[in-house]
Image (cartoon, rainbow over all chains, first blue to last red; front, side, top):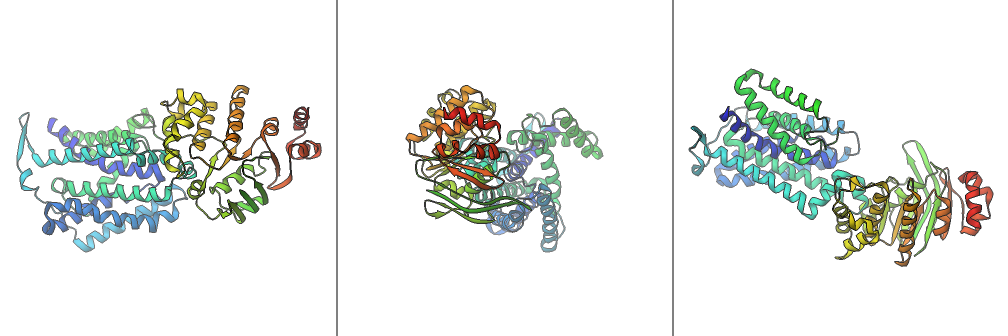
Length: 283
Length: 243
């Protein structure tokens, strides 16, 4: 139970980082970005590609490569259909995610790569009689720190204030002189960067394989929905609910982990249709 | 300062504006009146750039703005206060004003506190979420949010709609106060007596074109125009205003 919970918290801190970006992109531009998961996967792949030459600097470098790719993707495929229904961007990004997954398999093969954590983070620590890998704790703390920094940025900076205004009313923000088009693209790029960073940071824990994006995107969507659409603190809490439901449920009845997860999510949505804080949008 | 010439706007296949011509001079309050669906709000939205014109020309201080994005028009010094107010509900009152100040190239360090002081109730409510304000307070907030950008023209869409008489007076006083700042206002107003009280010049819009234009005296002399384009009930209101 304890080990499962701790693993849940570790997975939750990664999920918080990926679902935060998903929630931001949805909240600002009403874009349901199904391709967010493959950006996470690309982060993992670029990380293992750059690792031999750059060492652990690859963890910073991989997101830096993914960001311009994501911005190009936004410009070419999402921006032209931004004013249409959400279903259009969902379909386009759904297609894109399969195309990119296919490209990954074509370029880098279908096998799973697990890399060792850096030497200083190898080994385990004793937590209440359980041996726990140091790297897991470090990676979890780092992704929580980054998530926290994103919150601080949004809550306390001028750009963050603009982001919150756009989330409330995109058109009105534009009419006040905010270049929403530019901000939406930047946020898309930023969110992609955080997803890619999570993919790289998680590589020594969750391994790197072509389908890794598909798993995380479903969990991230669940977190966003649980948090209340577009509500960022709710999304972070949602991420931990999803991760804990999955790891604790899976710990007892492994083959039922997904069923337990969806049951928990469905139950919460029945009780709190506007998310855990009751502040998000319904649609 | 603002010149709209033969403005046509379509919403899908619906032809909403059929060649609207109007002008707003510097420091003037110009009223756009007419029945619901006459195209008043659409005219304002196409000036700020939220609705794109099918044809025609909009000039602001001799520059064409009909081809610009809304944020560019706003930065040139045009502010827009929509009919449904639209404060940023999850931001505080102060944040609503601050974000507008930061988005404007003309605002300065004192802008936010001056805008909050424009309607004293906003100062009291500065830390409250805008979504929790009453309708009248929200209206004051969005007017202050427009003013903080130090615009030279404000597009004001039905600022007194649904407000209690006391609040209508506050809004009216606010509009009159902006006069001293040398601002121009293009005001859409259903409340004819208020419009007659503050307006310098009037355009009556009907089914997407300008059916009448003139000063308040000229408008009041035309009971037929008022009855036909504003409604028979408005004639009495106009007659009262004339006395």
